[in-house]
Amino acid sequence: MIVITGASGFVGGHLVSHLVSAGSDIACLARSETASRSLLAKGCRVVPGDVIRPETLRGILHQDDVVIHLVGIIEEKGSATFQAVHVQGTRDLVAESKRAGVRHFFYQSALGADRGSWSGYLRTKAEAEEIVRQSGIPSTIFRPSLIIGPWDGFTRKLADMIKLSPVLPLPGEGKAKFQPVYIKDWLRCIQKVIDNPASFTGTYDIGGPEHLTYREIVEHLSRAMGFKKPVFSIPMGFMKLSASILERILPSPPVTSDQLRLLEQDNIAARDAIERYFGFTPKGFDDMLREFIR
Ligand SMILES: NC(=O)c1ccc[n+]([C@@H]2O[C@H](COP(=O)([O-])OP(=O)(O)OC[C@H]3O[C@@H](n4cnc5c(N)ncnc54)[C@H](OP(=O)(O)O)[C@@H]3O)[C@@H](O)[C@H]2O)c1
Figure 1 (cartoon, rainbow, N blue to C red):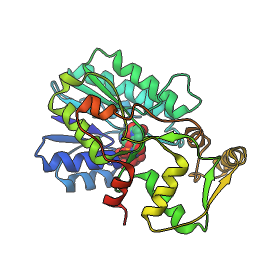
Figure 2: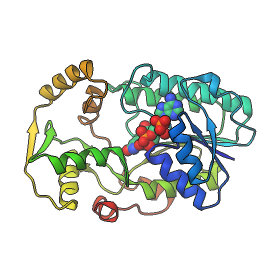
Figure 3: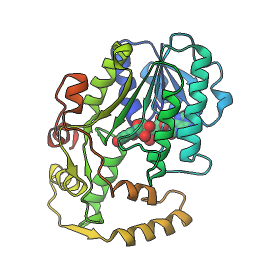
Figure 4: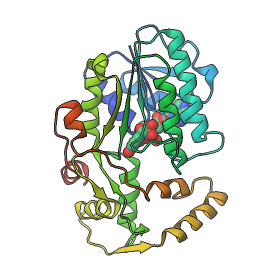
């Protein structure tokens, strides 16, 4: 059985649809009624559970299961901190996996994960990776750059901004580089791991064939949506100050200081990473946008 956490999210949703249509035997962890209902409607089994409530994880796994751990947060809210969700949540799920004797553990980290990072997101992803590696369970870790596709949060936020704003506001100069990868290409990679986990133990950078600056990403997306608007750079210092004030007064600020930090550093790997590890050429950014932007 394949057990998926984070199945109700963007990546998990695509994975579940893909595996259900392939006839795979899967069960998904869900922490809310809404998530349970939509997963059941897709035709998979649902296991109630929340990674920050370890008591809900007890007994959910069985010998020889393959665990696909996709849970992750991009902003902290209340008790759902990076430390609680990424580090302690992964630690508890790994402990349960060991107890059950699962066959393979897949962890979705992020490109740039680093214990010394300024970003709490990247720092805790690196800590979670270490827990998985040291568990003794055969494991695969993916470190993707931006994953792009229908319903992804990043493109959706940018697309809303492009539609509504007369100019395209850029935090800072928008010079940091990213390597967007198409969700369908990510699915091809994970399918290879599922088919043959023993051949894919280790840590894999996952990115598309291009290195694009944040500015280029905004410009390409705007073009794909049929807009031609001027770019307007907002000094990063001002953005950070505004974000830190908004974080204190709003439960869900439009952007957090941690997210701004992620826009200040390159988030790239080798352009041929997927080809080298998984043997196929992934789609370029304009081609992926052409497939799903209307
Ligand atoms: N999307 C990208 O560009 C990208 C790039 C690199 C790495 N990643 C990593 O890939 C993974 C999936 O990303 P995504 O874009 O699909 O994120 P997403 O859409 O925000 O989905 C996150 C998933 O995690 C679940 N979750 C959050 N807290 C939980 C908890 N305490 N217990 C159980 N489930 C919990 C959410 O469940 P609810 O529906 O209940 O909230 C949701 O299913 C994350 O680990 C992310 O860090 C994503």
